[in-house]
Image (tube, rainbow, N blue to C red; front, side, top):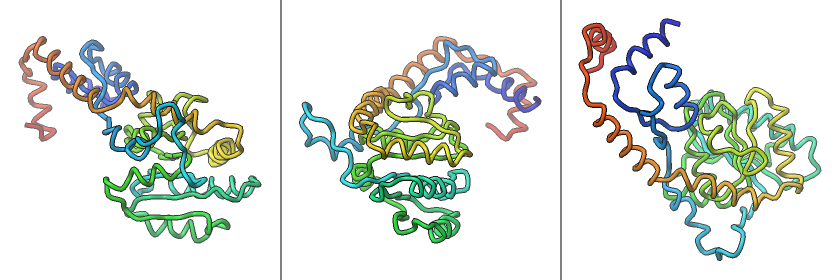
Length: 269
């Protein structure tokens, strides 16, 4: 494809790259970028900030998974976040589960708010679905701490930092396989599961699996914290340092006339 050929041409003008995770490494490699000059760690969060509510738990005890039996998602209200399908999946879960205590909470705001609120109103289980507005960063840990499982059903997601946040808070996760973080952060049957975001029944089935009591949510939550511990601020700093060092080792190269024309045409300086 012409687009990929142009991208390949453009990336050849860079000495190193700092990317989010494994899928991004693979993509750069497919464009011909040298693997030894690609470093991971671009998308991380302050894990300690989201773990703060659990610091009082003795290290000899399991972190307490939320006070409510609740599926939580935190997202901008955009079509690609697939929140209407999440509501549909919860409806199917609720219709086939004998457990009536589980609820769904959607935190965020955005252009699709009216559409999402309409989906909730039309739901036969609307009383078990809560839509909260935008939450400030300082208050997010409280929302994660009160939930029992995190769900990200996006149709498209370059990474999905909310998954890092939920895992740092000690939650099991259900993550769309179209999220960039899924490959690196979700270990199937260990801290959560991935799913096809277009398959509502599949997500409903995973919700039922989480809720039926056969899955140790505390163990999954501990695994989430163990996995995400390697994706913290230090990883970003180390990745950036390695990328800079690699670039300095390679040294600046002449852009070349054709590449210079291409960069100018794209509006880069």
